[in-house]
Amino acid sequence: MKVEQISIFMENKAGRLAEVTAILKEHGVNIRALSLADTADFGVLRMIVDDTQKTDLILKKAGFTVGKTEVVAVEVMDTPGGLHDILEVLREKNINVEYMYAFVQQNSDRAVMIFRFDDVDTAITHLSARGMTVVPGKRLYSM
Image 1 (cartoon, rainbow, N blue to C red):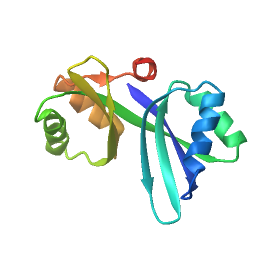
Image 2 (image 1 turned 180 degrees about the horizontal axis):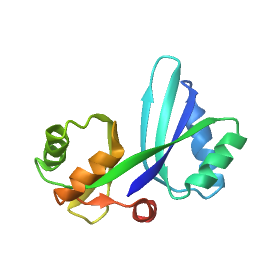
Image 3 (image 1 turned 60 degrees about the vertical axis):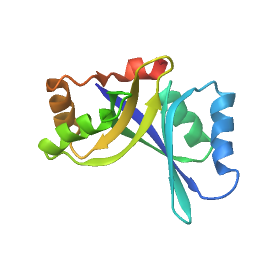
């Protein structure tokens, strides 16, 4: 039930993000979700893509530093308090959220939150036990 995420480390300068997206476009890779964090000198682009292995290879070949991370995708009701319900389960079990970002589904009353936890397996166990929908990678890559 884990999802593979690609992280690209790059210089924080104009046009660098467009270089990444041009490479992905050229090779037919579809970005499903993304988050960009930056400092003064560099940025980290985190992405869920439809073909993680291909993305890893083509970006490394283009000279980018690429890493893979296991994250968890959880469906959340698109209503006030939907995210809080998930976070409350995590708080009760003392599971830390290192970072998160959203993936919006078309024509749905639910969004998908991408989480990086300090303890991925425990988070999946407790979220599932409380009836939360943990989205498998295969389903997320094709949404």
